[in-house]
Length: 411
Image (cartoon, rainbow, N blue to C red; front, side, top):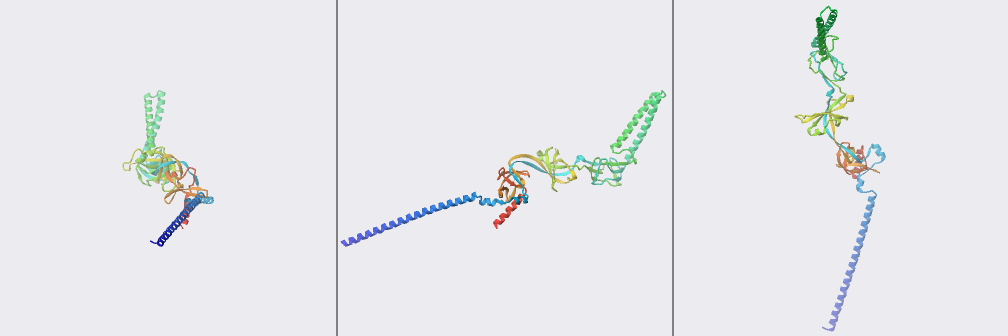
């Protein structure tokens, strides 16, 4: 190899080494710029996230949470008064668990009489009409009876014999005192007097037993009279009809009080006790009354396996009519609960139980979990706290406003 060739090879190697160094320096610079750019981008993202979180916190602190906006219902004081919405406060309360039993209004059997003639006869007149208010002792009908005629005749005969016996006794007494007649005659006259008195009393008691007094206008006239003040609820005789002594010709009931008869199943016997307070509610119209259980039957029917009980109800104005079906609420137990609200405050929204809680600008829809309920008060297990002011009567108006807001938002 010549000297010229050696110089050429050395030059080429130097140039190659120089190019390699330049390439390495260029790659290192680009990597440094990329790392710097990545670090700068990371710092920018962190700063951006921090700003977003700060804005979100400010949004929540200002009360503009999206969930709260969905539950809030704007309602002014003027709207509150116009809608007639009543407010109440959640607080501890007492839940009365009641048992509802079916029943029927019936006549007060202690003040109901089935009037019978007590003698055979033919109806001469009828003065009482069905549904008529009658007074004690008032004549309901007149019956012509041969039995009464015979008993009155017997009384008249006994009275005449008594008068004769009294006269004979007085005469014999005078004769005996004047030593004209024997003492035996005087004693016999006294005995006859006593027998006559007994005969008169016997005849009087027979007439009294059938409710017939002395004859004023005919020996056979028998008057059927009302046993007490009441209403004629049944009538089973007509003019000229022949009646028997045990025929039920009138039914009279004093409707100033009635019975609410209860049908009690065997499983409910322990809850139905004499003296227990109950509420009687009519099924045909809005009416209720409070009373006490006066009687509970000890026997169960063979077919129905139920017992009968009844409540005595005052009946002013005859509002409780016999035959009316009723429901009887019997108080089963009373329980104190930590939190209770009015039952009419609970509304159903999207198949959830909610209560509208009062806020400065209106109401807030609050979902609640319910416990025991007695129809008037309901236990709250979750969703409210003591002291919360909520809408009771008229809360359905707020529910309607909530529905309008949801519709507008969807539109």
